[in-house]
Image (cartoon, rainbow, N blue to C red; front, side, top):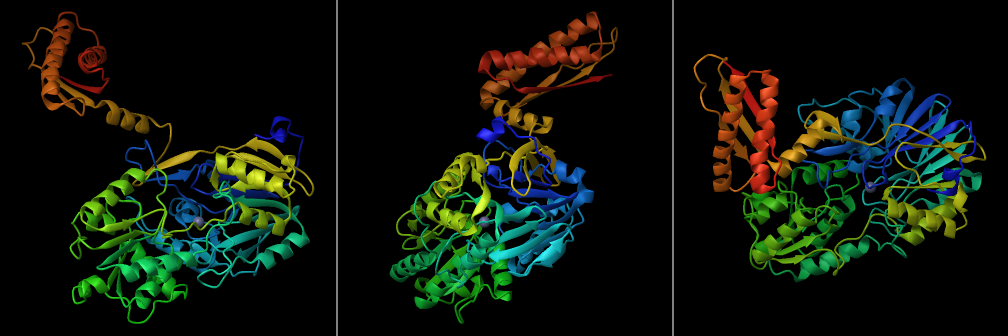
Length: 564
Ligand SMILES: [Zn+2]
């Protein structure tokens, strides 16, 4: 919260900037800009669920506001091809028939996402239009230009969005690596020119705002990996993010330098490498790549396996290799495993148990820390200051971070001269209204999280999620009974089954006890019948009390009482 939030000025400004995700919590980046009755969206990402989301595959921003105003949405513009920026498109484009703009590799990754079947969903068609760097396109009252930024994926862009009231710069995800692997550093000269012409608002990546100094250059990782590969006595397995094309490039180059052959394994790693290679973003050295089948023909000390699974994902290539379930290769004594990635918060348990498993198998495992087998793709504090100084915005909004990173980023802006009342930390759905020389908080639009389970999309507070959490926590009891009409011969005795409530023997004995309780309720009801619904409720409460007394659990009880 900032001062202007406490005392909002009256404002009838013509530009509205609305983050729908990516502020206050990492992931599902998405921002809407509105002007003159038109709307564009920047990025449409998803988030992988961490924590208590049983059965949920993905989390999307709540697109209610956009879907209710679909007739005003002119286009979606993408900064780069990471899933937290493009992952919602298959769901959004099923309902929104709008063009999607992005740079070449970004669109190639989008095409792959759209071709995926999601749950029971069908592949989605998209009107994909390529953005060329420094070649603006006009869209309603907006004019949008991509400026190159360096990130952990090629073809990353900051978006320069010119509007009738001024220029908005959306930084995308960036770092200021001065010698990046593809030779394409962040276009600071271009950003400075845009800054000189006057920028109304900068929205900046805040990911590493709370890290001092500069993020280490990507090339240092290549040198560390080559050193480890050179010393490794046997096979080398390297896990990294499947979209990290620069890292894949460095690993293949290191393999070449060390005289090793490389096998790429994992569906998305293979697919992304092919796409990047086709677009000239990845240059596979000659005579390095071999197939998994051909690896057996080579000395194991001359092999590198480039695999998915850096987060311990159970079905990934590295997980299957670690469990000894991969048909092509196993890990063993003398092998080296390098996690060239960070462990994303929330994945510590799965990644940790896989690392333990690899150590148990006799491998030497390198992960997080020394030697430098991974660096971030996001700039640290000094790089963010550099961006702000180049762009020289009148107003500043930190994006792409948990709340603490947004606060740190806002503080960096103040350190380089953006007064506190010109920085705005926005919540999802919070509207920032801008005119040529003012910015103030406006109303809020619906925002939050939508949960995806297969083809089902539901909201966070839905009864379905509450039921799943309760089932996971308390277990399930089913009561089945056949109820004869009053005056008819006695019904068959009720049966009770419990699942996930207690240990087997204790549960079975409680199930029998619950059967007696249910039978008593049924006999009572037969002597003075009321509605079957009342009986069902009495049985539910009475049976639940049995488990509650014995185990302090409140299982979900389902009474199936069938009238004969
Ligand atoms: Zn990114």
